Image (cartoon, rainbow, N blue to C red):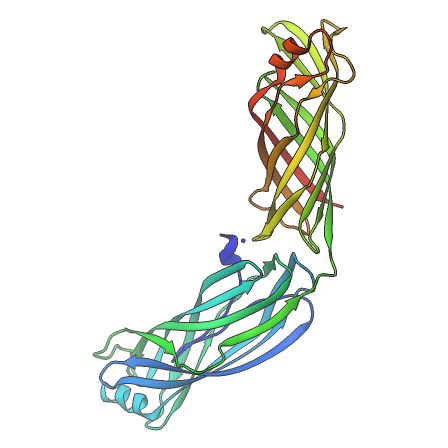
Amino acid sequence: MPKARWLLAAGLACLAVACLASPSAAATQVDKKLSYTCPFPLIGEQKLDVEVKASFDVPSAPGGTLTTSGLAVSVVVPDKATRGLALVGAASVEGTAAAEVTLANGSLTLPVTVPLTVAKTTLPPSGPFTAQATGSVPPIVVPNAGKTTITLGGFSTRLTPKKADGSFTGLGSFTSDCTLDPGQDSVLLSFDVGTTQSGYHYSLTGTTTVKALGTTVPLNGSFAVTTQPTFSDRPAFDPAQAAFKLFGFVPGTAELRFTPDGEQTGSLGDGGFVAHTKLALAVPQVSLFGVPVADQNCRASAPIPVDLRTGTGFALAAGGPVAGTYAIPPLTDCGAFTGYLSSLFQGEGNAFAVALTAR
């Protein structure tokens, strides 16, 4: 989600490298072999063979969760590196790594840096040796339908060779920035997020603030979101009762009825959405001192556009906060007091603040 680094994962270790990614729904086993070029002190650039194994559960619908388990990364380090480390008296090597991974899901492209731990590895007298690197991957919500890929990039390691007695060698700790050798398929995992779930239905609670009246009005209702084949929204607000005071002491009440008007569109992204909504506003009852002053046909003279955006913590599968601001145009057909009532309601700076709960 930002919460973005919730994301995916991939791990790659070179001489500490690991590769991770996350999904959630049908177990998919991955065994990927790649080659990298990494610079070493004293001996220059070396080619390393990396093997990544993991099990992924991939989501079947947008808003589902991606999880990963059984991540195991092996890095084969060539004999020349072994001999170079022996020159400084190294008996073992250990450290950390940071792998570059990219999650692509519909319109979402998310670069992720995954921290890894390189286990202490005892060095042989000569010949290649194999290092193991691991890292943990949090669950990840995949917001969009369609093809989703987890692609590996380069990685950086911070390695510390040590002598047999545990003391440092003359190299201390060194950093090696490794690059993926060209001509390889670096996609760790590819899967389709299905379209079996074509929409979401929520109950709605919250408020709308009418700035000109100086009042905040409780709201209830429902909200339907269609994600296939294109995004559309359909808010349904129950009639709401506004209580206000003119000049700070004249008590008044008004019934507000917000209903969809025209095309309702929007877009998905990063686990939430923005809904481009148009609302008709009817004000069939307005009373001052308990006396009705509006005809039942009283309403806003034009549709009210408002962008309703999901907030922090929103998830399509569960719901969460949604907010938006709007302007009320002049009122019409309110009877003899149309002009006066219009002046009470119209203006900018009005706001919706609601919470959606999945049904």
